[in-house]
Each structure stands twice: as C-alpha cells, then as structure tokens.
Length: 256
Image (cartoon, rainbow, N blue to C red; front, side, top):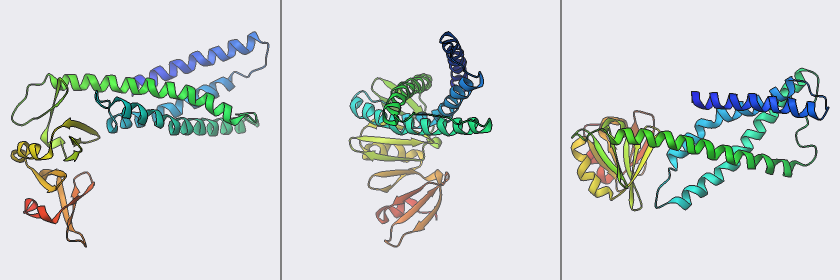
C-alpha cells in the first residue's frame, strides 16, 4: 500500500500544477485551493478503495484457461468502482466548498456524459491497480515456488509453477467443477483435480471430509452445532461457518 499512496500523491501534485498552469494560460480565475481539493478528494477515494481491488483479484484471479471470465468479471467491477469513486469525491468537494461558503458544480446538467467520462478514467485506474496487485502476487508466488517442498507443506500447481502452502494456513478445501479450491486466509488457490484425490493427500495433514464437496482442516474447527435438518454447522477459528453433512459426522468425532 505505501507505493500506491506515494504514486497517487505524486500524480495529484502534478495534476494540481497542470490545472493552475492551464487556467493561468487561459487567463481564467482559479483559487489555488480548488485544484488541490479536486485532485486530493479523488486520490483519497482511490487509495481507500485500492485494497478492494486486491481482494477482487484474490477472489477472481487470472487463469490461462479462463481469461474471458476474468476479463468479464473485472470489467463489470469497474462500474461500481467508478460509481463509488465519483460519489465519494463529489461529496468531499461539496463539503470543502461549503466550508468556504461556495457551491461546487459537478456535471453542469450533463450528468450521463460526465459519468461516462469518469468511468473511462476509472476503468483505466482499476486496470492499472489490478495489474500492479497481480504483479506483486506473482512475485510472492514465485518466491513461494522456490521454497523446497517438505512433508509438512501442501504443493499445488498452476500450470508450470508450483506453490507451497502451510497446512495450518488452509482452513478448508472445496470442489469447484473440475477444480479444487484452497482457502488460505484472504487468498484462494484454484488447482485442477478432484476432491477425492486431494482427500487422500490431505488426510495425513489433519483434513477431513465434512461434505461431499468440502474438506475442513480439523485444527481450524472451533465449534460444532447441530442443525434442524440433522446436519452440522462448523464454526472455524476465523468465525466463518461452513455446512457439514450428517453423513460425515464421524470424521468430526472428538471436535464437539
């Protein structure tokens, strides 16, 4: 995040100077505080929302065989991103102008065109931040791939690269079509395979099947509670609640 803040502030300073120079060149009156408010209100919202793009990347990461869904999802996410950005900086600017007894005019009666213009800029900003987060994630995965495998590590492969996960960091594993999805904190890792095959690999590490489509790390279970249907609600140490099937209750023996 510090690099995002640094780059954003530098861009804001350059844009403020550009506004002042342009208005002076046109011999138009402009108080120096106005472009400062314009730029830093925008930058403040982008910095605040940047972590959400990182979370979106973790939830919908790029896959060599699923490029179209990846592009489609993130293109769609640029719309709420832009709406929140514009709504936020407009509110901040109205507040700043009100403090000095003035009114801020955003669209001047042409709101659809202005929103389209802002979305165009915000889509590029979203893409730049997404690419930056993806680069740092790639570097982290590359560093992890250089770590030699050990019996206490879970090795998963994405194409030609390998990632080694600490079993304690993985809370649960679930089937996702022809893939298996590992949930480790805020990160998810998708690997081609079957849950049955991974069940055999992970059983020695303390993972148990609790549902036909789900394995859970027994060490991460904090509480079990029966459901009216006779199944079980599994509470993990991070507060997340997963559904367990009555068919696999025996796998949870000793965790009540």
